[in-house]
Structure formats: structure tokens, C-alpha cells
Image (cartoon, rainbow over all chains, first blue to last red; front, side, top):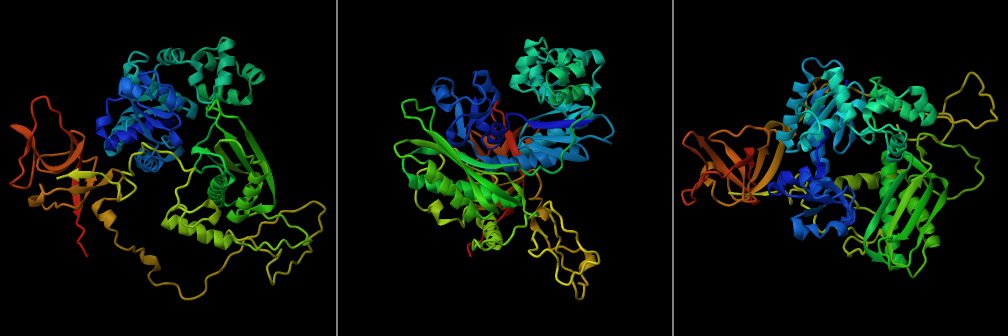
Length: 433
Length: 154
């Protein structure tokens, strides 16, 4: 048995903890650079705001419907997530943190009434963090995820499912007929692992609901779709195929990309941005004990600015030897940038990706044919990472990233960000006495 | 442990069997380890750790939050302007406890009076009136204050 604990409208719920006045009000949280809505309160959903809706398209609702928009405050959300995850961990013996607001709990060996237990944990999380969550339980991870969807929808849209399934839903505790009715009432697109494309194909083939998919013939699924979907169907039928993952897998590639606060036309600020992105990526690479073999850098104009002349280019720079050295990776990224930069465009976004990663525990032997005079700077990198960890992100950085004191042209626009309520002494709330 | 040995074999290591030459490339992972010599610490087995204030007052709990205090209405209860208060959000607010209340977009630190004759937020300063709830007005208690930390101007 598995459970999925998932915070409702997580980012919005976090904001409401320290701004109770936002309760009952339509609220959205905007992505980096205040680009689009990445979290919506139920009231905002009721206004018809879609996930990912661009800010400029919904901005008018500020005046007409009292919509409140906030810039994402990820540091704060991370701390609230940590609190929620620790409280959720008490549900069972093992936990997999799946995303900032979701974790799977293995319920093996847990005795007693699971629904009651889940309600207890749910109220513990609500009291301790102020974040409401939904808990779904089932025999497999796919079923637990589906049960979570049912628990949340039953609460948000009364009448969609039996009232008893709101907030906490255990599919295993349902009678066969009840379970069928619930599956028949759920569109197939809600199943974990059924993407938009596959969903469309399934509907076109007459598979509309979860019940339809669950009853499909396995061999047909494999033949017409894939082994992956076959696994999903098996999971829906109650055969566990997806294990709990304890350790996050090492990433196959590491990307750091961002839109700029405003358009950039010259090479210098672009170089600063690319330096910083490559440095960030290099830091992540070292954290997973990896080495990169190639560096990809790209720049582009904004497709939203229809009047601008458009340009978008990327280039991959192979490295002489696999490396995790910030200076080496930045140098390659800047060389790439120099080869694709063309004057006369209004650049809106740049990115750096480290590709073809390998573990730093493996080293390819080579004949000593040439000396590239590259000294091993892994100790320098370790010192830099340790300093930045202790004294704050970006304290020690390459000079080509620009100086913090200068107002960087390309830094993020976050005009509506709330303070670090739980992460900075200077930002914690003030209680009036 | 993450360091990579540059030489193929550690100094002083003499294999009994010659390593066959391979045509295919071979990946060799070496583990370099050090063995500690010297007298073991007599404190090793005692498992003692240094005192931790966070643990004592519960500041490391999942429901623990901090706020700064501004104002003089709680001085009789020992809470002063500029103090730091520790709040536990999961504690059930009871009569007589110092609480954080939400009122009109503000966080207030007050003493909770909760008796059959009514609910009010008491101040600890004769010059400051208590806040009495009117009918229909709802009071949200955000959390219970369990500790204060006072910063002396050093």
C-alpha cells in the first residue's frame, strides 16, 4: 500500500500562512520574472485562470475581480515544504519526496484504520504549517496518485465524488462497485503517466475513463501504445510496478536558463548572465559528483514581443576533457556565446546546459601526448562551494559574472515577492504588542 | 573518498599475477583509504553531544516559527519591544496563554482570556485596553508563544 500526500495549491497556501487576509481571495503565484501563473487558489481557478496563464493576459482581473498576484518566493516555499514533508513522514515507515509539494509514503506494515490515521496526519500538517493537503491511498503508486486526485476534487467540487472521499481517499477501503463508479467518473487524462498526447489517442480509441483504461487488454496496450502504458495499466489493476525511490537519481543533464528582467542588446551583460548560469550549473554538477563533457549555450529573443525581429541560436561546445571546473565550463560557454551572438536583436532569454555527464569516480586513461597545462583545481572548487554554502549564494564567483554592487541589467524581475518569513531574521513577521 | 588516484596502482603494491594487456579500454575505479593510527578518544563511546538551545525550547520542531515583537503592551508579562518570540503553531490555545492573534491583517501578541463570560485579548500594560471581541467577530489564533529571546544591546 502507498499513500500520496500533496499540498493543495501549495505556493498559494504557503503565502496565506503569513498573510491570512489572502484567505477567500483569488490569488496566483507567478513564475520567475513574473511570467505566468504557476499556482492558483481555488478562487482563482473559479475565475477561469488556467495553469501557466501568462500574467499579461490575466492582469486585468486585478482591478475587476480583486485578483492578488505574487512573485514566487521559492526559498520560503522550500522551508514550508520541508516542514510538511517531515510531518507527512509519520504516516508510514518509508517516504519518497517526489516534488516540492508531494511525497509518497510506503504503508507496508502499518496497522489500524488507514483513513483515520491519514486524517490525523492531515490535521497535524494543517495545524503545524497551515497548509491543507489531500491524501490518497492505493495498492500502487499510480492508484495512490489517482486517489489523491479524487480526494482533492471531492473537496473542491462537491458532488463530483462521494463526500466521504474528500481530503482523504483510500481506494482499497471501497467496495468493488464503489470503486468502479469512482473510476468511471474520472477522465483517463488524470492518470499518472498518461500524457496529453497519449490521452488524446486513448479518447480517440474510445477509452474515456479510468475504468475503460483499467479494463484494457494488456497485450493490446503494449502493441498499440508502449510498455510504459502497459505498466500504468498494470498499476491501475493493483500490480505494483513502480518502486519507491529513496535517493534522487543523478541528473543526466543540468540546465540553468532564465528570462531577463528586460531585453538585452549587447554582449557584455549577456556574458555576465551566461557566466552566472554556467557557474550555477557547475555547482550543481559538483554536488552530484559529476563531470560534463559538453556545454550547450543558447540565446533568444522574446516570441511574445511580436514586433521584434526574432533570433534564436544554440551551440554545443565539446570539452577537451570532462570537467566540473567552473572556470573551464564558463570559458567554454562564453566561447559558445561569442560564436552565436549577433548584434541588433533584443535578447530576452539565455541558458546554459551541461551535457553528456559522467561520474567523477571514473577516469578515462589517456596517453600523455600533450600537456594542456590544466592544473587540477578541484580543491579550489571545493573551497568556493564551501564558502558559498556558508556565506550565501554567489559570495565568491568569477569576475565575469559582474559585480553584485552594480545593478545588473538582466537580473530577475520579482516585483511582488513576499519576504523570507521563515528563512531570514530580517524578514520574519512583526507581532504588535 | 571522492579523490581519484592518478597512478594506476598504489605505491608498494605488487600484484602476484600479471595484469593481462587488453585491447579494449578498461575503466578502473580505485578506492583510496586512510587508516587512522594513534590512541582512540576515551570519550568516543559516551555519545555525548553539546547542549543545543533549539532542542531545549523546541525551536527545531516542524511547527516552530519566530516573530519580532514591536510595542510595549506586554511588559507586565515580560515581553518587551524588540524581543524575539518563539511560536508553536500546533499547540491548542488555552485561557491564560500568550498567543499570536490575527486581527485586521496584523499579528498581535496578547494574553488569551477565554472563559464562559467571553473571549478577549488582554494586554500586560495598564495603559493599554484589552481587546474585547464583538458579537459575530471571529478571532483567529495563529499560534501559542512558548518562549522569548531578549537581545541586550551589547
